[in-house]
Length: 209
Image (cartoon, rainbow, N blue to C red; front, side):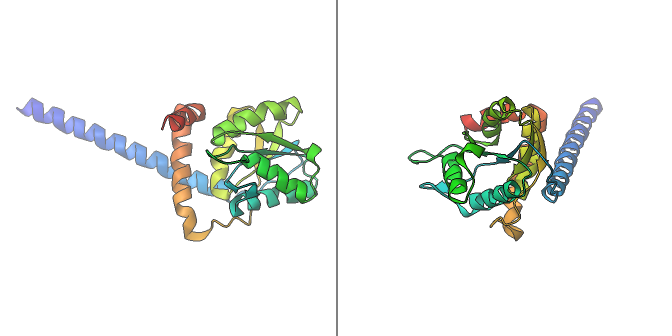
């Protein structure tokens, strides 16, 4: 009886230790995601990469427009000559996020020759498809444009597909204040799990869901 109780107590202690490790791990990850969201490090690069977001019949959503405006700003300041826009489409959509982004940039003065497109259903697919195109144009060093809360995961994925990315998040995102909390929580889980199992595997699991 005493031996059995001892085993149970040991099991509970191990479970408690495991829970503590998990909580600490994700707490540290949350801090890292938040700190990365505050970084802004523009410098000369080969290309500016814009992470996709929703579009409506070829018109960028306010969130996507904020990212595109940031890319235009960096392009206009001559930090890079190429802009890579990313993102696929939802069932029934006529345009992909990348196509809507390219149209918007062209309407606002960016030549079509300076714009590349890559499509994917999530951040991993976007960057894994964009990387070969960028690398073929010798654009290994890139500036990553997305919402601040999305920077940490985007930078990590970019690194995993062979790009050297620096954070240049949009400063005009319509998602701000307390409304960012669910996004930070989602990104914390995404970054935490991606580091453990790989962002490619996390994407595959997401696709199955």
